[in-house]
Image 1 (cartoon, rainbow, N blue to C red):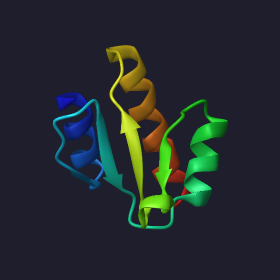
Image 2: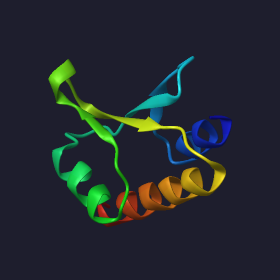
Image 3: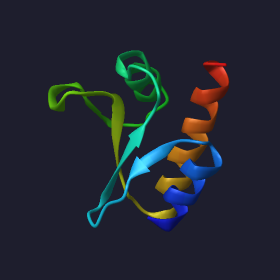
Image 4: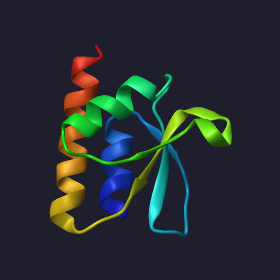
Length: 82
């Protein structure tokens, strides 16, 4: 979890502190399109529109290799959206 938190902080993405196996990340924009782009990269996250949090994604904490894959995907996503 610490790896993901640090990576999101370095990408200037805030998240909700959590005691669970996931982080809720504020993407600072509506996540509908971002969700689809991540899905095409093979990254499955949960958009939170149903919880009245349209700018947030729920990211499950995985194995080290999976977490690195997610971080790399988020970096690519942010580069595409510049």
